[in-house]
Length: 319
Image (tube, rainbow, N blue to C red):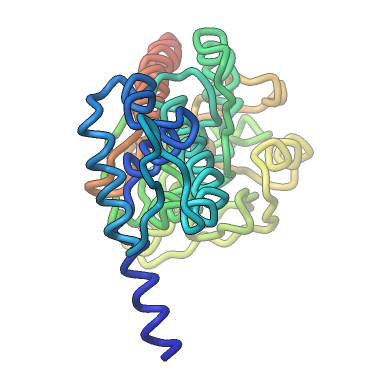
C-alpha cells in the first residue's frame, strides 16, 4: 500500500511543470485566470489550461469559480503553501543560471595548476573582474592532473593544465607552450644543453612532491630516462617551485622548470639555465568534459584566457 502511494506521488510530481506552478501562483495572487494572464502576459485560456493540467496531475480541484474569479479549495490551500515555496526555489535556481549566462552575477570556477604567478593569472583575474564587475571568480587547484580529474568528474567546468594529462572523457585544446630549462646554481653545470644522460646523473631537486610522477613535466623526464634505460632520482622533493629554486640557489642540487618561471620575482639571482637536448616543452591546454555544454560565462573567461596566454607567449619569445 505504501509502495503504491509512493509510486503515485512520484508519478504526479514528474508531471508537474514550472509553467503550471507559475500559472497556479499567479491565479492565487490575482484571484482570477484573467488577472493571472495579464500578470504573465499570456492568454486567459492558456492559464486555465495549465491549471487544469495541474489539477489533472494531482487528481484534485485546486480552485472553484466564484463569479468572475476563483477561490482555493481545501486541497488548493494545502498545495499553495508548498507550491509557493517550490516556485520561489526554482526561480532562484533558474535565475542563478541566468546570471552566469549574462555575466551579471554568480561565481565562476576555473581549474588551474601551481604556476599561476609564472603565467600571470593574477593579471587575467584583474582584467576579467574589471570587465565583469558583478562576477566572482575562483582559480582552483595546484596540479594539472588533479585539475583534469575534477573536470572529468564534473566538479569543474574547465581547467587550464600542463600536458600531458590522461584525456579519457576530456576535450583537450592546446593554448600555448613554454620551453623547459635545466637550472643550476653552478654555472659550470649549465654551459651546454642538458642531455637526459647528464640529467639522470645529476644531484636533483624535484617539486610537486605530492603529485610525483603524475606531474606532466616529471612524466616527460621519466619517459625520456626510461627510453635510455635510466631513472632520474631526486635528492630532495618539495611541493613548490619557489622552494625548489631556493634549494638550488643554496647548492643542494639542480632542477628543471618552464622558462616563464625565470621571469618571476621568485627566481633567485645567480642561477644559470640552459635548454634540454632535444628541446622539451611544457604545453598549456584547456580541458573540458567531452560533449559537455560550457556556460556562456565560462566561454567568455576562456576567450580572455586565450588572449592573455597569447600575450604571455609573445613576451617569452622576446629573449
